[in-house]
Length: 411
Image (cartoon, rainbow, N blue to C red):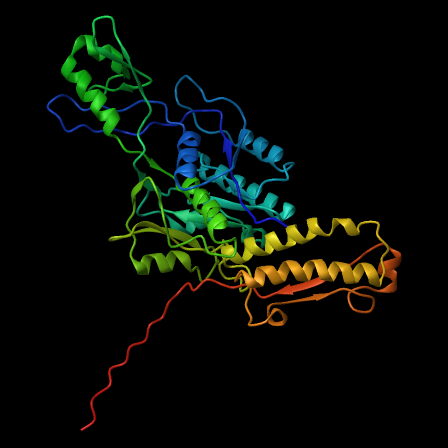
């Protein structure tokens, strides 16, 4: 059983999206960047910038080269349907989902989580809807996610990220010696989009200002791509049982919404619905950190933590794959002993790695398999070999409580 490494998965949409606005503080009129904004491109860049490794893109078509369009729920759902057939997927992220309507986002979130629940081998990373809004309607945003058992298979993050990424553009030499810019356009005083290259011949000052605006603009994007990279890097460096939190984000200068500790706690703990929102916070001297490791089942005593849910998934999948040799073997005591030995060796290694509680393996896990214990004579007659496994996974220290008392000196 190899060490678990989770590739990020992105669902590619067929259209481009509304471009960001670039305001230029200059003597010449303000410009608005109109370069095509492709969320999948920037999400992948953030994934790899944050030490992501293997990644799959489920493509559902090409981006539009015409005017920006809204994402298509049917196309994204089609991509998810194809993804359900793939075995080597452990994380799902949909960076373009925040551009859907609230209704479509809710439908897509339910579809993603249902696939995770049915497959039992993958986990979903969501961007909170309207994640750039400091006054986000939190009850409405939480209502985008279902209330069933499938909620344990996903986590949501807020707010969006102010990144160091810039809009792509290309400058090419012109015949008159001026540099012409393609793949970038601006609006001049609210006019229709103007290709930056056309400004070079009309006004060098306006052209230089427009190019500077495109170069200097920093993109605000949803965090799922970066978070997926953090998950993968954490899995490789520490293990799935380590919380993917308190980790710095690369290519980020600040979250777009600054949160206090009190605000982060209210987002992370939802007493009524249990739909925890993991926050991203900026700390002086430490940068921007992932500050939360709860699933959407935040009130579930067993499954409220991301590392616990994902580690149990890894155990289940690893043991299932490593015991496939037992299929069509005699369902007798010899086979039961061999299966217990394989599983015990695997869990002992995980205990030694620090993934399980207890000072001894006996305190960390148990394995039961046998007639009169996990199986009846009818089970054996029907070809069922049943193994019961219990483990005590470690849980993150989410709240560190420091008590300080003041002792009055005795007289």
